[in-house]
Image 1 (cartoon, helix red, strand yellow):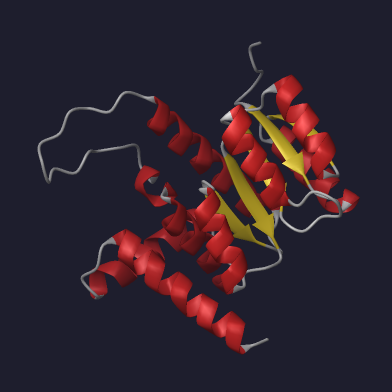
Image 2 (spheres, helix red, strand yellow):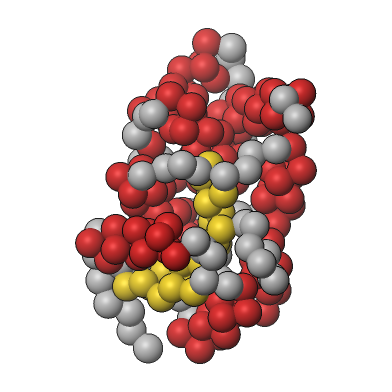
Length: 205
């Protein structure tokens, strides 16, 4: 079945106000949205409607966002991103292990979420497109910002957006400047930032 607009997104959150806000904002941005307020309904909708991307809250009654993500990955091959109020080390580790295309820390307004969703779609499209042949050690060029959607980098950008109230582009630029100043790769700098966040959040508990 052909999707309308920019793509079809499954949005899952047990907070009905958050769900309504996300659904409205994403529809205004041109996406077709399917919503669910629990994990069981989310899995049923994913099987029936085959969304292009799922945006999942993590902590819900019944099946968690992690449970839904594991099902989507194993049985539906549907990419997913997380939106959560939690950024502790265990949560970040689980997000990375599941292979989310992005991880956003609440509270975020829709003006920050839409660019992250658009970037996730760009990353998904880039992964589906046949890779151009490259020589060993050669960096394959991609659409602007596509390299930022490696999971660790996407998570680091989300953390910077949240911490400094930045748009996605500005947060990515900040991460790139940090990487350049310390002569590290973007992925390495992202990992270091996430490790620092994990230390801060664990010491704060």
